[in-house]
Length: 201
Image (cartoon, rainbow, N blue to C red):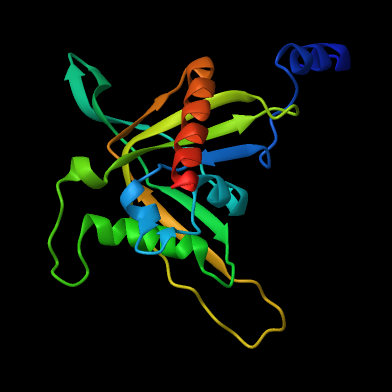
């Protein structure tokens, strides 16, 4: 079946245009214990990390099924679902802002010296990933519930001239939900307010 150019243009126009992979935003949690130290505020804030985020992945979901045979018919029946981990990649700066943030988050979950592990509700936080339109308004948003960094990947060095480093992390989470974009906008305002309080110390 073929469609006319006008039909295709009409569908694209009614859908608000084609979504672009470079228009996105990642909102990481404000964890006061990670930002405040003996010298006051750390250099890492969720807003600055969003600016440095080079790539992110929108989570998918797989329905888990098992086979059931009724008479001569074999069919699949859903019994649960599985979520893949989410990967984030950040531009590496000389102050190692992004890497320190996720290292500190991991150390907060499990003390690197005593190996004492906190309760999950202390270190697992919500992370928001948003698709933006051409006016940088949120058009689709998901929230990773009870997320935390399970992997801070290694950084490879080489003698190649001027190769910038990247900081890649893997987030695991309990489940993800699609957000109401209006409610998500209110969440953005609250996030900015919390960051402002921290900056004022």
